[in-house]
Image (cartoon, rainbow, N blue to C red):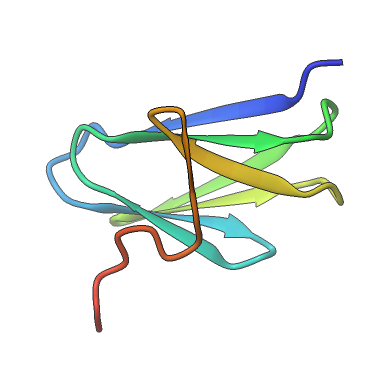
Length: 83
């Protein structure tokens, strides 16, 4: 079976912080950027919650996941801005 893939694009004019829950992993997308969330569980489902410049993706799966941008794996804290 093929893995579950979910694509997110930032079509806005501000940075978009994408959170993957329940792991609290964050990935910052600049305007025009995108990422792909990949889960090994083909039966995965997501719930989305958008608030201002933040998008929470709740991955309803016990399987692990990874995130790619332009075919390269990116990690938690990708382009995170200092507070």
